[in-house]
Image (tube, rainbow, N blue to C red; front, side, top):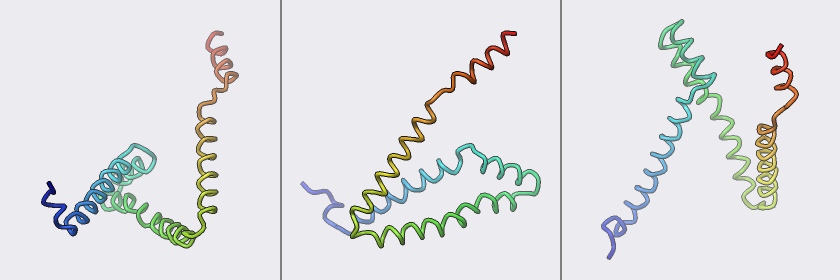
Length: 121
């Protein structure tokens, strides 16, 4: 038995688009309100100079990131037929992420030993 929505393909595509929009808004809000240096700067400027300056700082990533995103989309759209190149970019990116993960897990024992020795004396 078919559902009402599946009988009308236009509704199906609209709902799918709405799902992507809602998930994008939720992920964007979660990333936007995460504590970090930009949020601290927004608070600082808002408290010093008022809400208009805070809004300017909060909107600045939208203005600065948009050209970068458009440039990357343009480059990737021109590489659609080059699966090998996209695969190599993905492989290098994955290797770099693994490297960053391993480096973040390494603990420098000497640093902790020196701090522990200072506290003991």
